[in-house]
Image 1 (cartoon, one colour):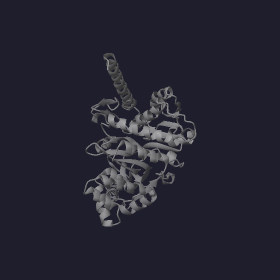
Image 2 (image 1 turned 90 degrees about the vertical axis):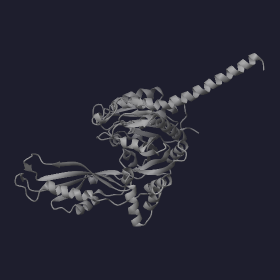
Image 3 (image 1 turned 120 degrees about the vertical axis):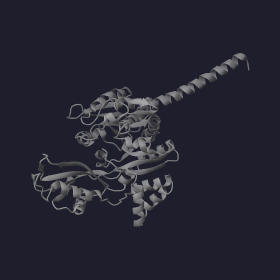
Image 4 (image 1 turned 60 degrees about the horizontal axis):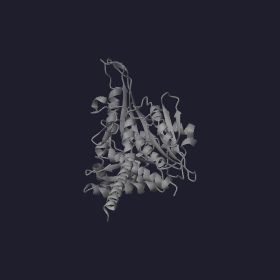
Length: 469
């Protein structure tokens, strides 16, 4: 080979190497942008109340629009509170897919954070701040995955809708309000939302991916005790506060029975495959029919509060009210119980059970607004979206168990599920059990690597169900 040709060949090879490296960097940057976007979202304080979710809508709308999305900011009657709808048009041969994510967050105890919770700090490979997991991380992943479709000029058979919501953490103008007033804008064949978990083990490897197909519903029970109101220097036997205390003590000792719906049984079966002994045997016993073994397994597994919560209806005291002066024995005292119900559970029946358990004269227990409770259908695990999400998860996290799941809390998915639209929930980034405890807590965080993996997984899902093949 001549010297000139050799130099040309070497130069061409060097250029090819540089080009390959640049392409890889572009791919990394396009996904690592998720962490940067999340940092920006965290810096918009949307603690609810008051929310101020309109500020997030104003931040994101021009970015979607620049990529060819049709954008609409829907204000609510409350100033500063708004929803954003960004739609990337397809050819219309299939019905839309919707990705829903709420922009409001819960408040913080600033003195208990090691960083400013609204600074969007990125350090040591993690993004820290309120909403990093719940659910501004989800906004960032869903938005970036949808934006990548536009950036790559992917031809679509269906519209891809990104909905950035208000009032999920509490308030009147949530997705139920939006569905009543703007249903055509968010109607779809199926949707993604928050819900299931991608949980890592001690080694950092993903153990399982759970995709929620149903949520526990929330109900309020009010425990009220009555007695004689009189001067505190002359106490009587029918003291309302003491009566309430005795009733609450008996309620605290009560545990609702294990109630496993089909998706929960699948979930525990998957955990049994990924758990070491003797925990694996406990999961097997929990799914059996021997009452003694089920009870023993329940005690063992319930040391994990998340697992305890999804296998039964839970009862949590959240508010108490009694008295108005330090020298007056009040004539009444009350406690509010937040009940998270397994699908099919009846709050009025539970109130009647607790009334018998309390067994206290002068104490009544009632279900508040039980008649307004909405019963939603569990989303099918046979849809195209569910299958695509399972495939994408298995590709992204080889060896991990993928399973349907009953979400232990509530989401805003009822706006669609009550209309027959399947919704699948996932927090689309791997997190450790420790990181899970930080959600709604202190030093909430998610890793940059997890955000990258989640964005890749959701992008792959969208390609499978929305791209023209």
